[in-house]
Length: 265
Image (cartoon, rainbow, N blue to C red):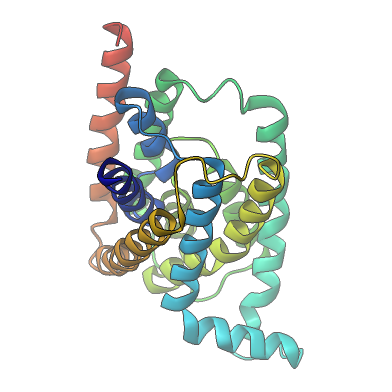
């Protein structure tokens, strides 16, 4: 029981922290599974995804309420009404890239070597985001398409959703506060879609398999608390122009994983 709870806490902590920091939760969970044998059951994965969704909705509850109100009233001219269509536009390339990954690449890019290489690619993108010029206040449809495609590529283990979308927004010239906010609001429909797809894929394997209601609740609680703190941290780091610092961690981790694979681990 204690071992199960400890495993739940560890997995919840990793999910909550790495989902929102630009360091890829999927890749970290794969690494932990490979080297330490900690695995999350299908039901636990779906539950953590739901917890992840609730965290970002709660953090941006004011913005989400304003967006839903604008949508109900078909108000596309207010501050939050103006980002409804860009979010919808962005979801098209996100879905296309995600489907292409599932159809053609999912089985080949799950190795530790592939994850190590992808960490390096993501690190480069996060690092060069510091060169972006803050010249835009609004997200155009063209920017939304590019950011949506970037978010789609975040399905690759080693690429972070927040990392690629915030970096892309900054490189496109969006102001930092807007880049942070749009990135996370854009993640809500993406995570919801991911949750539905994951639940459908695992519909025949949703038994508890060792994770009882207590463990599930603990995992979600840990992921929620850590996730909320992680979003707050990203907000401060983006505002202070230090977002690119995360690249050093993923560079180091990527090189370490590649070295371990070469060494035969």
